[in-house]
Length: 200
Image (tube, rainbow, N blue to C red; front, side):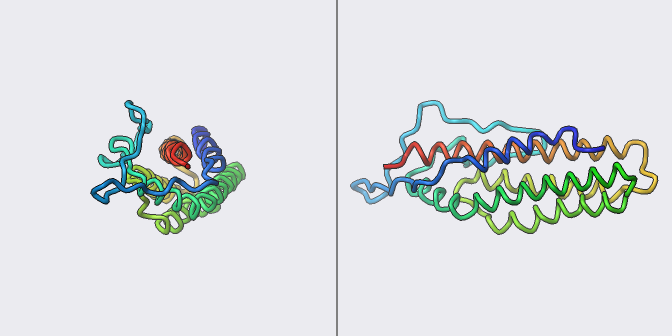
């Protein structure tokens, strides 16, 4: 059975389902020069944890605090895509369960089909939400897509009977996908906190 390190995806699903962005972000406030007022953030920026196989943007919110226009844009993005993101994660986890069930029955073809379905769901649905107003979020989502493709490549190598190291390699790919999903969930949570803290 695979998926021993996929619990991070459950964390990400929880973060997505409870991100707390029901209220719009504050409208931009212009300075005398007509540019948006810089967002007031704590002196120590909120960092987004890194994980193996992921890379966040050098110009993302982790390093460059957004202005109020960007915060408002992110609020709109969250409202448009966050529910779909939760549904996607739920579907991915269900497909992982189907993959494990197929493995338990010795159904290698079914396991490969489910594995490929995971990558297909990620590669088909996530790009519709790109790019995002936060380069960190864009990079995190792209990392999830890449991890899905890497998992699919591992599954494609499955044969019947599977090689001795197949379970380890697929489990490792699952771990990378779970880590990417966890980082994505952390970015969602961080950006949601920024949005909520700057509501009027």
